[in-house]
Amino acid sequence: MTRIRRLAVFVFWAALSASLIHAQELQGYQGFQFGTKLVAVARQTDMKPSEAKLLHQRPAMIQELWSYRPLGSSSLPTAPVREVVFSFYNGELFRMVINYDQDRTEGLTDEDMVAAISAKYGIAAKPVAAVVLFSSSQVYNDSQKVIARWEDAQYSFNLFRYSYQPAFGMVAFSKQLDTLAKAAVVEAFRLDKEEAP
Image (cartoon, rainbow, N blue to C red):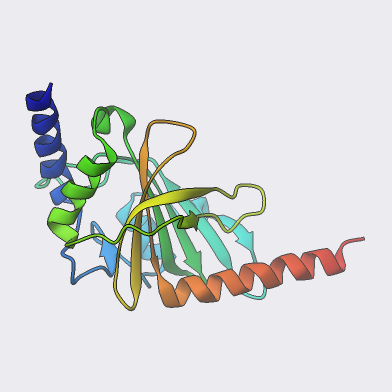
């Protein structure tokens, strides 16, 4: 069993290594850079900008684009990713929620995932009782306990395991844009409530 688990970790790490970036380069994920315009991200995912869902229009435009297409190029193996939710603040990418394919990560423990990702990002912090929220919508708003975190002054990558299913995910964001987006979302809810009949 240990041998099979080690093989699974190796295979997973090999696929993941093509998609993860070096510890000093946390500004994006697999070719998607924070601050990139919605039009460019849509083009990278073979989607149309019109497929993005408008969540809030004021005081800032908050949009989400859900991609179910495999990430990667023809020269690189695709990452073990099931879907990515791209979030935009005034048209700029500020957050990505990466959901890993349950079948391709089956049998991996939290420690296996942290070790595989740390091989690229460096040593992970293991925050105590940290929870990460990852939606700008009042309708769909999820939070999960962080298993490990890789961050610098500008960016944060947070690995989690869903509490209601045996699958892993990662929330990656630009700290500056995320702060602006959160403030805009709070103000949008306030305005909506104030103007409700």
